[in-house]
Amino acid sequence: MTASPPRVVVAGIGNLMRGDDGVGPVVATRLAPALPASVRTLVGLGDPLELIEVWDGAELAIVVDAVVSGAPPGTIHVLDADEPLPSMFRRLSTHLFSVAQVIELGRVMERTADRVVVIGVEAASMDQDQIGLTPQIDAAAREVVSIVTAMVDDHLSHDVGAVGNA
Amino acid sequence: MTGENGTRRIDVDYLARVEGEGSMKVLVVDGVVQDVEFGIFEPPRFFEAFMRGRMFTEAPDITARICGICPVAYQMSSVHAMEDACDTTVDGQLRALRRLLYCGEWIESHALHVYMLHAPDFLGYESAIHMAADHRDIVERGLALKKAGNRIVTVLGGREIHPINVRVGGFYRAPTKPELMALVDELEWARDAAVATVEWVAALPMPWIELDFEFVSLSHPDEYPFNEGRIVSNRGLDIAVAEFNDVFEEEHVARSNALHSRIKERGAYHVGPLARYSLNFEKLRPAARGAALTAGLGSTCFNPFQSIVVRAVEIVHACEEALAVIEAYERPPAPYVTVVPRGAEGHGASEAPRGMLYHRYRIDDKGRIRDAQIVPPTSQNQLTIESDLRAVLDAHLDLPDDELGWKLEQTIRNYDPCISCATHFLDLRIERRRS
Image (cartoon, rainbow over all chains, first blue to last red; front, side, top):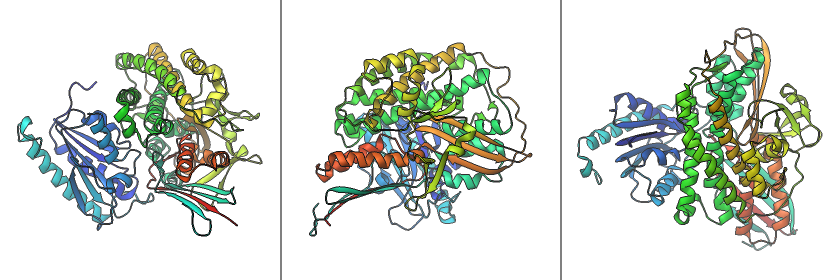
């Protein structure tokens, strides 16, 4: 049983064996060794619904997922989930419950982190005959690692009560 | 909507709450259903090619990636097939642990489908999110049930996502008795919650249609099937798993990159909870059998919409089974038996939450995979899903397009089609023409 929720959750959603859909797991894998113990990292959630259990009570949750919105491949969308997410997080997640749906469900059920940030990386290819990221998205993944690291550092350097609207 | 030339067409963006990508097209001419196509895009075909040249020991970890919802099923069918090829039997506590792991996946997958995907159909909600606004306690129960299954997979599988503890021959590490005993309280709660689930879903407004299915599932002399048994049907089929390709064939259909399975010379068949239940009712644990009878089910069930009730019954069974395995558990002296490769072909079938999952591998004497065949439940059900859609269409053509579309989505969801890792849209299109 989990005794208490982690302060910060970083989750990479996606499938490593489906091209750029693996960007979430790749980012989470690269981040994991460098993050402090108060951060829980989830690599490659096949079912984003699991987030409900994991982020319930956390201060900050950062979710990284691949998206296709028509923007140039490699574009990084960073969104606070205070407001309904745009449709790219609704329909183009390759997963059963999209990230947007899980956020909505968490909100309805009052089981969510204090703050949820969603980082969508515009995919170039989600072909299932491609294992590993395309070079463009791999570069974007490195940038996302920096963004998330900064976000987590910033959060942890503040007092618990002061970070809600960071 | 009605077009100028009398053509009616309904477009639904995508089929919500079905995992994956696919399309459905319906053509109705002069009020008669002319054509129904349910096409899906399926990843196992790619994995079959990807496996060639890999070591036989890699099969469970690679195939587990095919599905985010049922990785255990892929692991189980692959290890059984490899052990069959290598003429190795895994029994005793290791065998029991495999059943326990499968229980976890059934509980998890069925709870997800019953509560989060299927129940909203029956209650007229667009999604579980909408349902949660009115029935938060119910959705909480569903999530807690799912979590109970997840905990088994985590403890036994080594981690929550894509369990990594399974290997050909057994496990990398066998859990201790106290590790399993720590699951008991939650599983006892889950069993009671599952019984309550059966009562709840049995009382949902239930569309009534009974269809003439040929049910196919594994059947074991003593147990409700998970990992082992012969392949049987309600029309006299009774074969060893190794005879799968003698009886079943897969045909390529242009509209889908998935192969459609059929029984040679007979056609469509049905795998999944309804088939398992109807062919193995007497082997359900007593609490599950009792819950089914109390809910008004008989020993067979031919109404595909009642699959929601049968799934709930199977959750009761899986909880009971898990508790029994844990009670009898003694940590085995070794977590696995050594499996020595040999040049041979092996077959394995297990009961994934969505139905029978067949794997066949040919390996060489160094253990390299030469050839792989994976037949997932959804491709086996594809012809049956189309045939159900026809039946439902015939019965409900008078409905307005939006209601008809809803009913068709619900019909597809009866099968919990798993098209995972594929994705994107299921484009649902109904076209009505006059000649």
